[in-house]
Image (cartoon, rainbow, N blue to C red; front, top):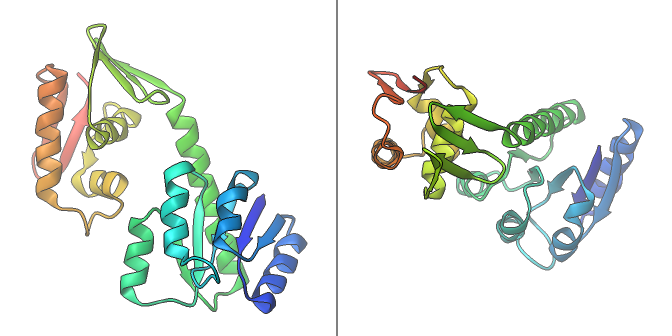
Length: 219
């Protein structure tokens, strides 16, 4: 795995670089946030420290998420709840507080990259149900052959259901995958978006509410 390590501390950076290389990874270390923003395309995973000399790591994460989907694991000494929550909301795939055992770090890296690979594979599919066609990669939906305009959240909700076509998906899982955290998301927002989605699809019965549980896409 190609790993971009964004770490300005030489002791930590050198030790991690050596440990990653010894376990078959190909690490590249940079010290500044600006370097992360120009070299992220060379990596399969970014290990991002937050205490960088030029730019706060959370700002680097925010800018990175505007241009790339590369998995990002925040690895930092900043363990206060506000920083953790903000990091996850800004798009970090995981957040680990130093010091961390190497075995745990490697396991978390593997989990993130496997999850990203599964998501990428799912996004290449076109799902069809009745006369509704959901193009995951192009993020387009056609109903009866005509394209239907959905908001970002509406499409993401539909995509989660489409990947599990015919299967009931819980409210908690929908909120977790679309908003990032089922406990931080507002339950009412889910209901509003699902109502809007139903109205745009104009296919009664295609999107079923499972009372007390969640929703299912399919006839």
